[in-house]
Length: 199
Image (cartoon, rainbow, N blue to C red; front, side, top):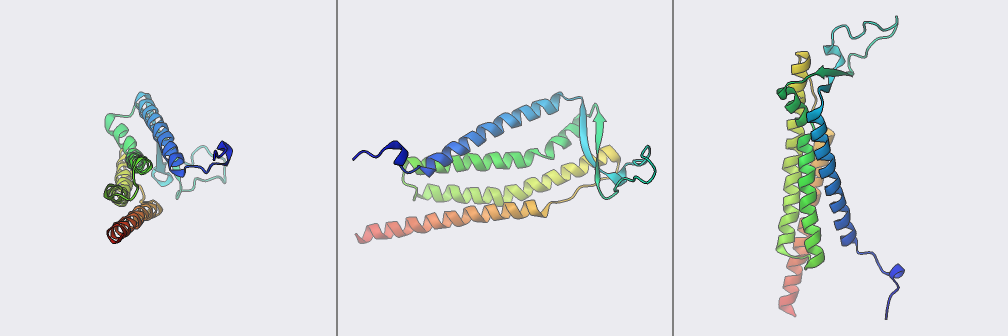
């Protein structure tokens, strides 16, 4: 019996594979364009603590003040290579971790569509996803914080940056989530192999 196209169930693995492929291509384009534009600029905008900028309130009407707990954008004309590198490292590590995770996820979904999803290689790739998120994510966050410290020190003479605990928490949640899915797939694989020996 022929099922009309509009009544067929969607293949969610195919949808996921397509979505991950589109996001990977988009990230590659955005990352390449962003790095090229950053290298071509002759100035650099750095977010610095307002307290580090002397005379920040000068020129404002009476009664208006700058929140010294907040931040200001400082424009650095003709940044040197060290400043450009530090600015790049405030975003690049997370970008690389996300691209790595998506590439591994794409490989997992692609193999699951073409072959049996309950294979040892699927389990190992899911575990790799978990480890990349658990180790790479917090490491990227830490590297970005160190780069931000270095950049603000170069611009203001006073190092200032903060570590985002929410970002680390999200990386940990994603990592443990991938490890949990890997364990579910592994248990399904073991149960099926045990059933195969019984039947």
